[in-house]
Image (cartoon, rainbow, N blue to C red):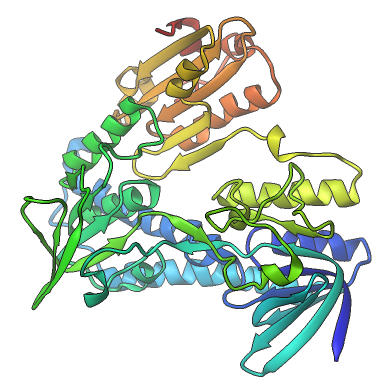
Length: 460
């Protein structure tokens, strides 16, 4: 029998559960379908577990640096089983919190299984216990994404890790080879080096974190190499050969092979849209499989929306949650919020972290704007010096005509927090002088942002 609801939400990631909360509070009957883990990527295999591991790795790193602070320390070792247990406890606690919230939500029925469209208003949910047929006036897709597994000669002959399976390791790799040089790859590289593993990063392009300005990429590489991570770029012809003790990876023709014990693939993400039966609903996707949406996250089918990683509008927890806010505002609050209203912002959680907002300097230069740029090394930020963490820099770029801030990179201790004051001024469309003239607390990282704004020079 077909069960009827006002709304069906497919996926229990960062957008699905809060939308269920808003819809049920408005008196609607909601079905929420999740085929795997409640909480989605962030809770189970993304932000929560990885940043928990980053914290353990930082503790080990700081312990090894004890002498720098006048603290006597002995040999530092890492118990990977305990590190994993701590990660699991925090992750499972967060997952249970979302599960309990949904279980106690009046008007929401949770279905565990794989949902596929049968026609534009109907989904069949297949599970171990059978299947259910659900029908609704509105349908919201929040199905997330997964790691790309590239076609590489020899890859099928060896075991490999992704960002999901590496979280289950409770022993230390002797040599972790990471294929990819972007955000996920870099976080795991530094993390496992600090745990004590030998780590090699192999990147196809000419530099790490290639979407960033070149000075950011160069600083990332310097930080990792200073900690003993080996970096290989220009790996344009990767081949893998299985060996008795693991594998050998040859990065390019004529290059010496790299012998590794564990291989992590971190070359990109793809949306979980290939097995939803979207064709039965007439939902359009682009060439990469992302669901095509408008500025308010509606698909080409009038009653279907797509939120989170599957719509190609952002691959972060905060963009997914903001997608929920945009959908809820338009449907329930008569508030016409749009995707184009938000400012690009994210962080790279190596240590020190990179906090980013708006355009890169390269993007501003390419736009032809008349601009000003300011930059200050963290060696000239008192708080960083006091903490003994002076790697990185702060950088901001401003439109010289409108005086609006166009973008910023706060790459250093506290950068992931300090960048928000710039983001807030950008969102308010206030001139940079508003921030430049604001008194800040001393001693902080943020207090030097006004000074940097007062010392800008024309962008060349």
